[in-house]
Image 1 (cartoon, helix red, strand yellow):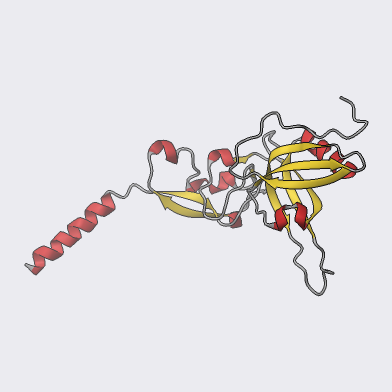
Image 2 (tube, rainbow, N blue to C red; image 1 turned 90 degrees about the vertical axis):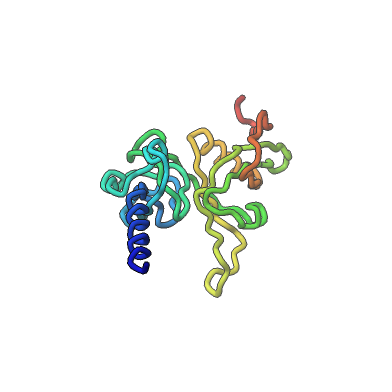
Length: 205
């Protein structure tokens, strides 16, 4: 009886191993933001059970050599699967530009932003009170909150880094020069259509 039970357990284990169709794939070892050039330290391996069509969208563990040196194009959080659409060759047109600028904490959602959040940028021009959206649904790449301490002077500014395109970069630079800029967190919100655009006084168009 005991022998039969032991044989049954061994048979069950053998069948489970035979049915294990999981595949080793690459995952992010830490949060990866757009513009990151991937190194070995950025990646880990996990086994996943899925269909062949889903597995085909991911990088297998044996493809590390091909992913090393690629540029991340979208935020990949620690532990998330690395998809083939998440990276591009260095210099590829799909890679993001990034832009950083300081803002008072109160105008940057209290500094409570994280990489991967989406924000709208609103500007108000000094003296004229002209206002409008500089950009909508921009991705936050990073935020440095300058935590206060004995050597920081208690700065209330934060430095925000956004993914931008050339037009967004110039518009944002103009808005920062012309007036007051505020971030509105739009993570998960419906996209804005026909939002009033910010145009500084004297700008053409």
